[in-house]
Length: 276
Image 1 (cartoon, rainbow, N blue to C red):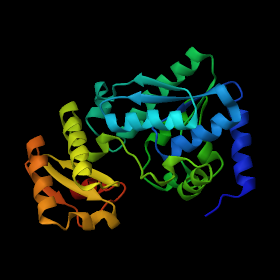
Image 2 (cartoon, helix red, strand yellow):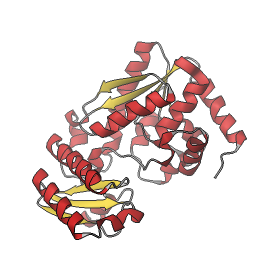
Image 3 (tube, rainbow, N blue to C red):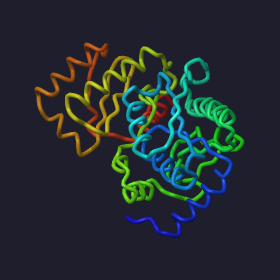
Image 4 (cartoon, rainbow, N blue to C red):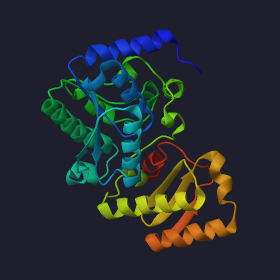
């Protein structure tokens, strides 16, 4: 796929207009935010900065990746701290927990924008995301001076990936990111202990297998491992399975299982159907 020149120019015009008085970009280091940051930096220069929120729901590995990607782009990166777990509406883990998370994040980003003398905040929701379960987008629509350039210019996930490749960004092949809280079934409380256990488990599985697309879902002590469909074959080795099981039990899981269907975006929504 190749992004049309007209669509790319439309994106740059949108960024130039909304970011003319300076913009703070919500930056996770993933495909969407890194490509948005790269284009914004090319259009606005130093009037565009990236901001990454460090919190218990964001792994140390992803934070380190975000630093590397920001350096690659050449954009200034600020790291701020947030604590979604302090909000009971988030930690009790309802279906719309992302709404409360996004609302807090945007409040911090707007504060950072004001501190820098900037007026706008950009975030990386893409046009394809709107067809999925995205309660956080409600918080975006409610916020003042917060914009979603990919949505406004109707860039799909595939088009963003193609643009990232054209721009030579290392993130063009990076699998989708999601916060660690997404590994816990809805209505099961999110705690720092569970988040740390999940983070350690995913780091261990990656180290043992080299898998790139990975989620370790925490079903109250049962680790359900999801990997990219083409990566499932990595686990067809008794020695590998034994090593993963031993390591995850050492971390604190009681049972360890591999999801035979592989990675599925939003798979925890099935826990809501089961509850009903």
